[in-house]
Structures are given as C-alpha cells and as structure tokens.
Length: 243
Length: 109
Image (tube, rainbow over the protein chains, first blue to last red):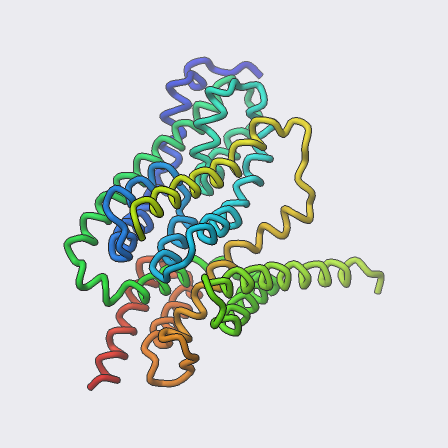
C-alpha cells in the first residue's frame, strides 16, 4: 500500500504525536502541579524542584523522592529507589528497539530521555500501525515534546503556588502525599497478585518501621514484589495443570 | 538537605533514570530481558508506593495508631473508596484531604 506523503511528513507526524498526547497532558497537569507544591513544602528550593523535573523527568519517581526527602532518607537510598521505580522503563525501551534500531544516537538519546509511561502508551499504537511511514519517530518526538514542556510548566506553577501557601502545605504535606499515592496505586490493583503485592509491601514496611534510613520501605517493597510474583506463578501453574 | 546533597541527589536520580531508559534502546539489538524480570518489574510501582503509604497512614508519629483518633485513617479510607470507584485523581485527593481535616477538627474539638 502506498503511503500518502502529505500525511506522513515529519512535521505532520510531530504534530499528530502532540495532538494524540493531549488527554495524557490533561491527566498529568494535577501531578505536575502537586509535585511542584509538595517538593516546595518538603523544603526543596525552587531551583532543585525545577531541576528535578528538567533532568529526571519521571513522575512517580519524583513523587517518591520528595516523600523520602521529607522523611530524612539517605541520598543513596533515594537514588536506589529511583532506579527500582524506573526500572519498568527498560521494558518500554526493549519493546521500542525494533522500531528505533535504524536511528542514529542523536535521535536515540532524546527519545530515551523523554520515554515515559504516557509517551510510550501513545506512541506504540503508531509504531504498530501497518503503514510504512518513514517518520514514525517524529510522532514519538511530538508526543515527548508536548509531555515534557507540559511537565515543566506544571512543576513551575505548582512550586510557585506551594511557596505562597507554605504554612498550609506544612500541615497538609503528609496527608496530601498519602492520598495522592493512594490515588495512583488503587487503579493498579486489578488482580489478586497486585493486591497481595501492595498489602504485603505495606505490612512489611510497618513491621520494619524501626530500621534506620527508611530501610523498611526497601524491604517492604521487595517483599511485596516477591509476594505478588509468587502468587502469579502459582495461579499460572494451577491453571495449566490438567484437571 | 544541603545544596551539595541536593545536587548529588538530582544528578544521581538523573543518572539512574537515563541509565534505565537509554542503554537498552542503544545496544539491545543483542540482549533480551527475560520474561521473569519483566513480570517482577510490573509489581514495582504498587509495592514501593504501598510501602510508603502504610507507615504514613498507620504510623504517623512512629507508633502504630490503628484507632479512631488517627485522622490519617479517615483520609486513607475515603481515598481508597473514591479511587476504587474510578473517580479522577483530583477527586481522590480532595476527598481524602477533606476527610483528614474534618476528622482532625472533630477529634480536636
């Protein structure tokens, strides 16, 4: 099938990528604002709040880092947690390899740097569409550019708002963070292994509360991951057994 | 946290995040993540976040407070219920925070 050069030009792909990302932008706005406000309330100076969004650019890891900073966690442990939280991006990267392997490093670096849940979700259907447009990576770049600039703007606005209400944020920081995290986690718990994973992680973290440097968080998270995975294995095994 | 610590933190977070996103994309024509690793990774976000949430809600002052005098408990119950009903994130946050301040107002009164 011949592709229409008009609809697959680089410019068109870029704009189309940005356009398809609009729902994700709307969804990210409250997170960006909250990140800016919570980071400010946790005592991060404006430059550090903005630098985190500019350089790290990973929503859930940024939230977790602010939570850990506010609890006085050691820097090395926060970095280790960031690694684990973002490890799923390796899955995205792995699944994009067949679509991007023809590109040069000057494309791979920015596309890798801006690879988020949202851009991945929007872009994969474009790569998988059967047309042979040579400019599909421009679609990903358009999505990434829209997400990235939106995230920076929201971080800035949130940080400025957070600074205005410093006293209020001081009181509400912990609870705002807790309910935000609940709002992120609950939709993930659609299967029994996921639910078991979350509950195990939480209970083990409670039991390990006395440990220094928030090590309980780490142990709890690993216990939760193993619990969920083990249940998933068992269910898979019992399903595949002949009855 | 000092400025030096903050810079170390941000640069470190940048390094590990980019370090996860980039190498596979750049070099992975050869290597392949095993299915087991992929499935383990799926549990990372709920496990890490729950390990943060539980102590925040149930041990707000370091000790277990599984009682009616803990305002965080009301916030969490309302937030979980709202999120389970597939309400948007903003509603979950507003509902939870309203429950927290209402509970604290009543408990303190």
